[in-house]
Structure formats: structure tokens, C-alpha cells
Amino acid sequence: MTDQRITATPIDPVKLDRLAEVAVKVGLGLRPGQDLLLTAPAIALPLVRRIAVHAYKAGAGIVTPILSDEEMTLARYRHGHDNSFDRAANWLYEGMAKAFSENTARLAIVGDNPMLLSGEDPSKVARASKANSMAYQPALEKIVNFDTNWNIIAYPSPSWAKQVFPNDPEDVAIGKLADAIFAASRVDREDAIGNWASHNAVLRERTNWLNGQRFRALQYNGPGVDLTIGLADGHEWEGGASSAKNGISCNANIPTEEVFTTPHCRRVYGHVVSSKPLSYQGTLIDNIAVRFEDGKIVDAKASRGAEVLNKVLDTDEGARRLGEVALVPHSSPISQSGLLFYNTLFDENAASHIALGQCYSKCFVNGAQLTPQQIAAQGGNQSLIHIDWMIGSAETDIDGILADGSKVPVFRKGEWAK
Image 1 (tube, rainbow, N blue to C red):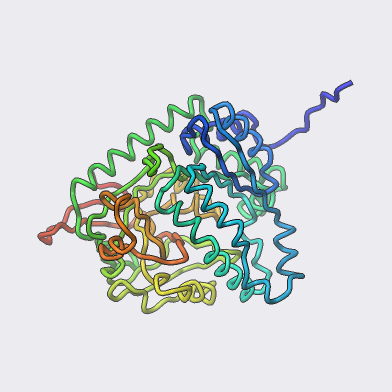
Image 2: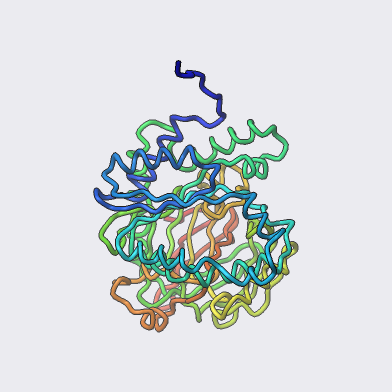
């Protein structure tokens, strides 16, 4: 006799299934016959299974999952030989790069404990991160250049939930984080697919306006902020759904509230402080304060996590320069939730932000046809890293600077001026 008992879960199965469907149909825009490579924490297997169902219903060729595990990750740092931290699984990333070049779609589920490595040797963490970044570069290039359609979503793991809601019992924390993820991902209501179509249309209106302005730079003013970010020559604003080089329209991030483009990596001046903490590889970096000269960070401080911040900035030449600038209104749903998710996928959608490191070739006019040398000549940055951190607040004013030096209001008090 089959056991018909159902284990109670604080994660709404209907909304979880909606998230899987949105990931496949909106996030990826998966095409019939297209293979899918999926990475996820092992704890997210319930979501992985639902994604496989929706992917195969959409006509997927082969769905290949690669699962990670927090205990196995910790085992490496606690018992691995010292010289192993300068190595990475190159063969795996080479295979991923080959898959992406052959039109395999890419889906990443995030959900690991954001502070998992907080108690581990920071030198080992930094070495392993650098080795992994170098090994992943061939695959990462396919993603940042939008060679294929890709998407990132999230799953409410117990360890992550307890970080966000430390004072609640585990099942309550999981339920709260699940609800927050579903709301931010716009799957908490009926017709999630239609909700995303409407949201993408709003973001498209924003990008169309910004692209029509052809700003030379953005000027930021607010508490602790006096910053001018030059925009790359031939930059193009993106937001919401966009087309990959394979012609498939995808929403790379779910959730997303941002419109973004490529700054000129040699034309950034002034100083800025972070408006929210940055959670990076187990370290919370708070009150970041940096000063730019000729596009490069020449002075950097933080009230917490300063050592890790400076190691990040020393990753390579491009790590001290910007690869992305993004606009997010203070009234975004994630901002209004009042939560710190300790995860950039969510926290970057709570405030306007900038990113250190690698730029997106997608954010150039005719970017698909530009060579890396042409992108660099137009001001695009190159680096092993791409790390977003928040600089916007309810007090932030942003002006667009036109070619003749005149200014157009873009944000006032953290909200769109237009």
C-alpha cells in the first residue's frame, strides 16, 4: 500500500511551482530542443525537480543538474591540503563553457548560507575564490556577454533563513524567507507570467527614456556622496527582459527592479559611501567608503570587513574600477520589505548600485559585434570579479549630464524624477 502521508512544509508548494514555471518561461525563455545546465544547493532539490518538470514540458532536450552541499564545502576548508586552495575544477568550467557555446541554457539557484565561510581562514577563502574565478572565466565570458539565455533565482534554505530571521524558529524563518522570495519574484499572485510581462514593460519604458537621452555621465549627490560616473562610449541601458545572442529573450535575474548600463572605467570621480551592507563570501562588509580618481579607487575604507574589501580590490587591475551602474528606486518592493537578504540577487534590487569589476558587453550599442578590444577602447572594464554594492537611498539625487554639459534630473530623493 502506498504511503499517502504528506510532510508539512513552510514553503508554499503552489508558489514554489510558479517560481519554477517563471524561471523556465520568463527567466530563460527556454526553447524546444534546448539543453539546460542547472546549478543549485542540494537543499533546493524540491525546486530543482519542479524546474525539470517545467523544462521538459517546454520541450527541453537534456536537463543536467549540478548540486553543491554546505557540509562538503566546509569539509574542504577544514580538512583540505593547503595547496588545494590554489586550484579549481578547470575541467568542469571548460565543459560549461563548451555547453554554453553550443546553446545550452544556464540556470542558477542560490540559497546557501551567505555566512557559511565566516569562520574559515580568510586567506584560504580568498585563494580559493581567486582560483575559482580564474577557472570559471571561459564560462563566465559566455554569460556576461549573453552568448546564451540564462537566469538566477533563489530557494529559501534553512541556513539562509536563519541569517535573515535569526530570532525565529527554523520553520518560521523558512516560511518568512519563502514568502519574501515569492513576493520579490512576483509569483505570490495568480498569473505570474502576466505579472512579469507588465513589469518588463515598465522597465522597458525606463531604458527607452535613458537611451534616448544619451547621457555622457551621471552625477550623484546625497549624504556622504559626491560622485560623477562617466558612461561608456556607445553605452546602452538594459532592464528586465533582453535578448541573448542566440535570439532568445530572457530575464537574467529574478527578482529584478533595476535598469543598468556600462560606466566608463576611466571616467569616475569623487567619493561615495555604501547605503547597505555587502555580504561577500561569509563576510559582512559595512559602511564602505571609497574615493575615485580617473576611474580607479584610490582610497577604500569600511567599518567592518575592511580586510576582505581590500583583498577584493587587489584581485586584479580591473577590480578597482566599475563595470556596472544601476538605477533602482527607493520605493522598490525589496527596499520596502525592510529586509537585508545577505544576498546580492535581492539586496541589489533594494537600492541604486554600482559594481566593481567586469562589464557586460550587452550594455553597448551593437555589443554582440564588438571585440573585447573595442569594448575596452569604449570604456568597458575587464576583471575576474563582478561585485555589486548599494549606494542609493531615500536622500539620493541623480542628474544625467548631456554632451553639452547641461543636466537632466533622473532621481530626486531616491525616486525617478520623470
